[in-house]
Structures are given as C-alpha cells and as structure tokens.
Image 1 (cartoon, one colour):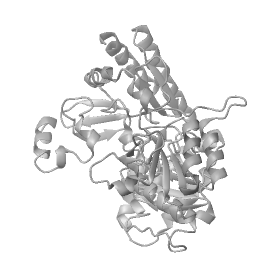
Image 2 (cartoon, rainbow, N blue to C red; image 1 turned 90 degrees about the vertical axis):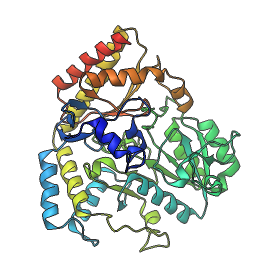
Image 3 (cartoon, rainbow, N blue to C red; image 1 turned 45 degrees about the vertical axis):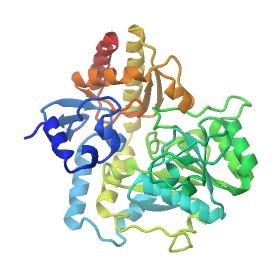
Length: 431
C-alpha cells in the first residue's frame, strides 16, 4: 500500500490541492497530511501504520467514537433495504421526533445533507418570512460556505460586508452585516441603522470555528450576549438563528439554547445527527417553517434529504446518548482533558487557556480566554504547529489548525486521556 506522502502526491494530480476540504491540506501546521484507512473507538490508523488518539472525531459527529457497533449495524441494516429512496421513509419521521424531543424550539424540522445547506435554507426562510434582505453575522463564526456567509466586515464600523472569497458577488456580500462576536453595543448600533432591513441574526452561540469562544454570560443585572441578541431581534422583528451544528447534542439538554434558556426562532443542526454520515437539519417555530415548500413559497429540495442511511445512523447515535450515565462520562472525560492540559502547560510555564462546552474544547496559547476574533488572532498561534506535530509524534491527533475545536467521544477512556495529558506535558516542556 502507498504511504501518505505517495498518496498525497498522487492525489494532487486529480484532486484540487490533493484534498476535498481545505483544512485537510495541513497548510495551517505544515507537513504532509496523513491518510487514514481505519478508525476504531478513540483511535485512527493511518496507511503508514501509525495509531493516533483522535480528538478531531470527523470534526464533531463521532461522539460515540469510530465504528461504534450499534451505528455500524444500523447503517448496514438500512443499506440492505436501500441506500436511497428519493421518497419518504419511516426513519426520517423517527429522527425528526427525536430531534424535537431534545430541541423543543424546533416545532417543525427539515432534513438536508449538510450544515452548509441547513444554514443556506434557514437564511432563505428568514428572508422569505420577514420580507427583508439583510442578515447579520459575527466575525469568526463559520456557517458553511454559501456565498452570503463568506463575507468579512466592511471598511467602516457599520458598513455592509465585502466578499471574503473569490467568486462571491459584491451584490451578495452587501446583504450581510458583520460585527464582532460578543459585541452587543456594535450589534445594537447595527439595528439602529439597518433595523427595518435585517431579516435575521445568525450566531454560533459558542463560537466553535475560532477555537471555542464562549458568549459573555449574564451577570446579575448585566445582560449576556445571547440574551441581548434575543432582546434586539425581538424588538426589531428580526429572527434569531442559532447555528448549533457543533454544540448540538454535546450536552444532555440538547445545546446552548437549553443551557442558557435563550430560545432562537430557528436552529441549524448537523454533525451528530448523522453519526458520521452527511446530514443537516433546520427547524424552528411552526409559523416560520410553514413558509417552506410545499406549504409555503420558500423553495428547498434535495434528493438525498432524509436518506435512510443517514437517518438510521443518527437514530442509533441518539439512542445511545439517551442511556443513563452517557453524558456524565462524556463530561468527566472532557473535564479531565481540559484540566490536565491546562495543568501540564502551567507546569511548563506555557500560557494556555482552555474553554469547554460539554465534550467540545478549545485551546488558546494565551493567559486568558479570547472574547472575539481579534483577540483570537492576538494569541500566540505560532506555538500551535509545534504542539500539533509534537502530539502527532506521540500518537495523538488534534485538528491541523490553531483555530479549530477539539472533541472528546464516549470511546475516550480515562486511561486514554491520561496518556494524552502525559504526552502534552512532554510537548509543552519542549516548547
């Protein structure tokens, strides 16, 4: 079998950049990306023969670990019946009911095939429902690669956005406002200027695509970031959309909205409800969702939406998550990793701050947690590539980028996490 270097050279002859998603090229950390052929529990096995403790977990969906037997059996059983009907099947009804049980705010659900598609549909729905065109998003929050979300802040404090990618029309970017995450004052100013044109505010309630940046919480009489967004959107007739693709199902109550008691109008989900297969979902208030076709004028369709393989996989995952003690175990392992990494860094004299939401973690080479993208960029990200490669050499796989979250699965045992912490102690000492 070819090794990773040989496969990468071969891949570059037929795949753009040798990969099918940019971060897989390892440009953020340097070196040649590893090619993997097998996953088992908390471990990945590369074509080169290496075994690595996996803290990427396919960027989140593998909350039970790799090749969980119940998920594998569910997918195989579904495949024996058909890989796709292009028509309704019982499992999509069952999974929708399970999603609504955990996320009561999702009175009606629409399954799609990715988080990007869920966001794209939610924004179209918000515009169709309100009759407005502008969407407000936050710098550093990632909502997939649809044109309107690949937008950065304009040159002025409250100008409309500018394209952040080639191929995005200026006219599309001009319907997106971008303000700093956790900045209620700037958000309020945006509503003061554009309030009657803003259809929706979309936010990662814990920003999981610039590390893992928490929202500023409510403190006594002081309003929290998410509470402020709910107040502003309600006051101006705009919708509040929570992108919980990363945070959904990472805590037993469902997601950030259950933990904070801030209820959005629409929610976008993905990752875990596919159990490793391509899936996304959006849902929310009935009166809004009924604007989607076939009930309303907002069009969305998809041949593979609600396909039996993804539905079977998602159902198997969510049924395991309902079992007693599962979330306690996830919480314990994630807490163990967070505290162990912070302690190892402190002992080595390395400033490291760690954020955690359930079994999702963010690591920042800084003495304090950042509150927005500007502060994330001010951290000592140059330490991340040697940390990444040092951990990889010791058999532990973290994301090949300093701005991605880490994930703990049910398959990560106490002993596995302890070995990871011990390896991190060696790496921090070397740093």
